[in-house]
Amino acid sequence: MKSIKSIFAIGFTALLVSCSTTKETTATKTAQNRGRSNVETTTNTDKMKVVDSRTVSSKASATASANGMSDMDEKANFNQMYTDLDMNPQQIARFEKDWKNSTDSWKRANRNKTMNNYERIETQDRILKNILDDSQFESYQQWVRDHAGGK
Image 1: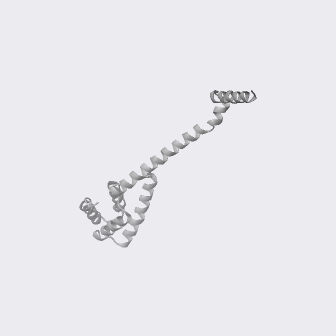
Image 2 (image 1 turned 90 degrees about the vertical axis):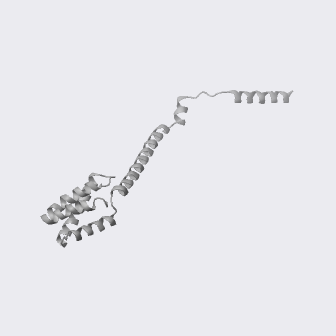
Image 3 (image 1 turned 45 degrees about the vertical axis):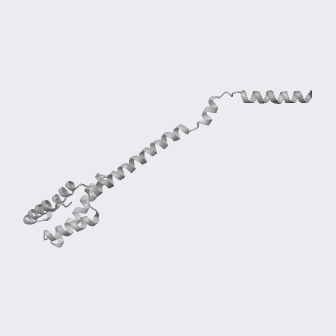
């Protein structure tokens, strides 16, 4: 009889434990979700920024390769221009100093962008107009027209 009561008590207790539902309190919900919504929002925002910055970077590098010139190509292009326009060392030094200042200024104003060929030529025109004499500047304008297809 004692063993039957023990088995019955254990079975009844097991039945109550397995069938019972717990009542969630507000404190329990808060403890389970503590800070989770804030972390998810911040994480999603950070992921979007990372995705956007990757997109911008890849677009910028694609633009750079499509429109821009590498530093080596630019240097070779300038050396060709110096020779073709018969520029003296003072003119070359002044152009290179002004070119560096102009491109640095442009980069500060246009972050994550690459100067396209039109902008490059406009900047060169503005700089060289003050450096070259009239006949050299006319030669430069013809030189740009002749080399426009190669860029």
